[in-house]
Length: 429
RNA sequence: GGAGGGAUGGCCGAGCGGUUGAAGGCGGCGGUCUUGAAAACCGCUGUGGGGGAAACUCCACCCUGGGUUCGAAUCCCAGUCCCUCCGCCA
Image 1 (tube, rainbow, N blue to C red):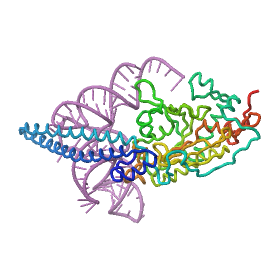
Image 2: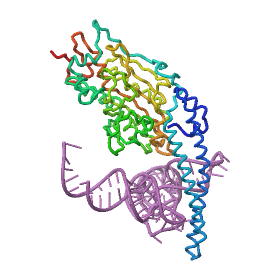
Image 3: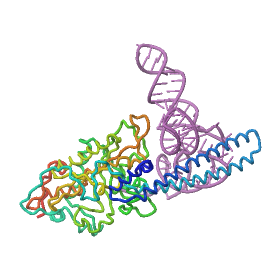
Image 4: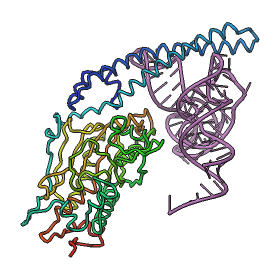
């Protein structure tokens, strides 16, 4: 949620910033501002009514003590009480409406974010790694995987339908090795605390991250009268780890890493990435998350992005870093770097990680604060998240980049300790 | 699933429906004392929202949401979470 005070005092700036996202939210912003003004008008009236009621209450108590008649006072009390109730109802309605609008406004882009309406305006920041050259035509993983006997899309569709996959044998093992490798790296070398969170979260948690109320269609909701949803990313449970808390500022930054499956409806992506493991209803991810101070958050953003990049470097997978344009960023992000891994089978870079600073956007929704130096006034924390990495896409990259003429795949050295020292995945004979 | 018990400030804990934002203790901060420290003593010590340049001031908040009442931390209803016992269960 953006700061309501900004809408009140700097409407033009907010409008301009949101316009960079290729959105037109002038109507909503004007409505927020109007409701805000109404709110500020009701509050003094309400408080005055409450004060009158309170003072009268004290008089009644006194009169009762001395045994005086208090019938007139009681009658007056009724009037005051009605006024309070009326004003309270008015304030409640205005605040609810205002909140409803605010919850649907995206975050303001940071000043370092390039303008632009969509991914075409994204800017490459850096490249790493030498693109592999093959003396044969490299296969895409949707051919390579089944040929190797490690990926099975047809059987998955029988039990679950489209956008699911079964990993078999060395494929399942490679998947597990990637998870363990990433967790080991981030916990031992990058200082993250490992979290094993719930995979089902309630609606409030999703409001906190910005997935609700606007993107309900992207989520799998449990049947029945529960308000539980399957996590679309570990970002949700991790962000809510400290909801409604005031963190001792001396403990910041707090860095967490969690492995979870992720579940997404992928509504509206019909016909997009229908082949292979790129876009699935269920995938796995190792997620990085930080709580930090506003002063440190952009520094931490760089660090977090580097931590994700190091995974790719250790695996020897060529990639590039891209800064997303304002129009291509997610709802909650103020700034996002995407990491794109090279997929030779598709002759292109594909997103494998997205690292965002949401500034106070999620903290304001989830009420996450910190107290600098452990004392003084509590301030909203900044939150950061990033994939470190998407496991399925990493698996694809390992297969496509490591493939050999005979259809076998070389296991990256860094992964071998997690693969019983297996060096090559051989095709079935 | 059944039967009970509970939820109050950073923590523990008290609170006949009427100056109770809330006793007391612990912890924390500041001070006095001390060569230093401890002890002792004194003071301060929540969050949000209005107003104000500020000092300050007003309003709200005792799990959440309703209700009763002139007035609710205190009474009633619903819900959430925690604990104990029984049943079931990986």
